Image 1: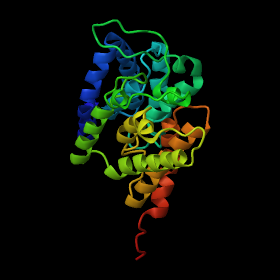
Image 2: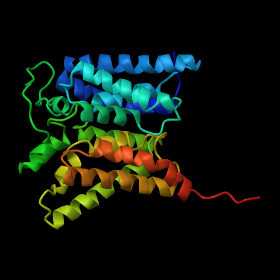
Image 3: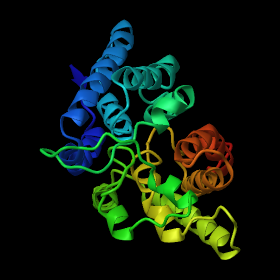
Image 4: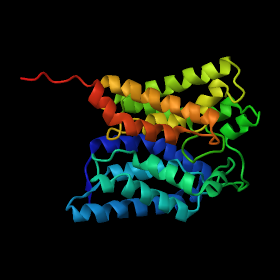
Length: 297
């Protein structure tokens, strides 16, 4: 049924520990949302690829996985369904399917529902809990929101995922281990990860040093929100990211800098989705201008 893609299987393998921890934290809620995300994501690609007489790509499993992990745990099932349908159809299939899309489908779907349903999405955060215990359904602020309100989160909790936020973005420790596996196995490009995180770090430190009123403490900024998650799993998307070495460094800088600028100066407490989509917009241009031109014979 699925088109075999070894690279995508490695990505799915790297997500297993994060899936397990998400299930530990949110239990059946995680499975409930996952059912709708995978059902509608695969179904959407199936209908489009059937008309092209092609199989469903294993890449759609990665898209569904990343989209699911980027959702707050109290996201309504119908909002999650709309998001994955938009991501797979409007950010992938309308361009011709796998390998032809300009934008990262998971990011596009995520940003679409955040902009379309801001009240629902910002009010869908669940407090920390574990499988088998009562999980509080009281809405609470994300670490980035807390920092904006003058509350300094515990670094230990941020590092080990004991905080509110999207279901898969909080496990900094596991995300770092996944990044090492992806880099060592040559599944993810280290330049994309490094340039994104370094540019975000440098800009955050600069705002912190000049005592900008809305600046965020650097360690907390790196471990809060979805910066690490997006840098490892979405910035490295082999289709929507540039291919040349110079372009990859600049691409990562664009994503990292845009993320921090939006975090600092806009009404949005998070800017990673905007950063990736803006980077996607310039990816092909960066490749065109920075790739070595072939000599004319």
